[in-house]
Length: 130
Image (cartoon, rainbow, N blue to C red):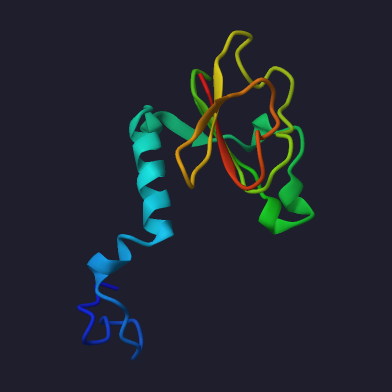
């Protein structure tokens, strides 16, 4: 809610949250800004859910490991969100034969060239393939 820091936000219970502008400095807001910048750097409106690019879905055994994938109809942009550090099980032929891939760390915006489909470090990562 859009709290003024004095009164409860309408429809959000009786607790008084910090003023909305104070929340902009919290880590979650910074992460959201990093991901907004990422999505604005690609033609995100062309993306469609693409669970079929995955050879397996780890989220079936553990929901916190659910990998989200999206791809354009032309397959020229693929975005995969990996919530935990591990390999991304992509199906053979899911990507164009020639492509560039980069890993993006949502918390920092750090980018690493993807030399394969294993995250470069612990935590969650976004894979961008063009």
